[in-house]
Image (cartoon, rainbow, N blue to C red; front, side, top):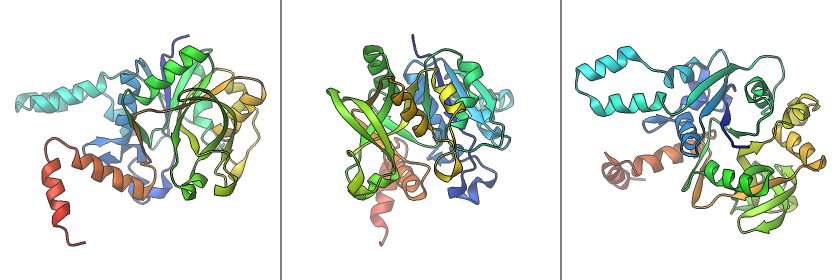
Length: 291
């Protein structure tokens, strides 16, 4: 079954970025001149995805507006000969077919927005990408995962190596066995382990290809850490049912945790340095700073 839909959860409060996120969705924080969620949507489109399902809330209208057509703005740009800007905002709206679902109900946890997508997903396999972080990879992360899915016919999670032992406790770390090359079979995911208790240094995080069976599992999960419903717990339950779940270590990749303040700032600086219009000027500015 082809992967045709990706779910992007984007209903959270973004409390780590308050007060900025009181009125602006964290997914709309700019990385130079594009919001974080656009990088995520572009990855999905570059991986062949046709339908992008964004799970939002009442405070996330800016996301919907960003991926919509703006005829008044388009006319303004056209009348002033701003062809480059006009082409870019048209391209954004045409990336994919955007579907929006409002997350409702009192339950919390990162599995809840995945469950909210069930009416659109139905009985298909589907992908999940978080809306406030991304991996820059060539070929795209999701495209690499889809190739693993086609070959091994199971669920797939993106994986990255964590070089510093001190950072292992920030991620879900996989207990795994080798399959071939950059592919591993996951026996269990240990959420945020102590460094000395981590089963490996491979973090399984950020992108998922999941079967429709995950919905019933989430629906029946009891609240876990912090009283929330976690996708990691649902995936571990899927493994216990005997369902094959694979980790795909992403090649030629770098992970950008833009949901974290300091990592977000690092991301902005890095992308500003590689910007074709002013990267050299910005690099000179940084060098001239008396740090």
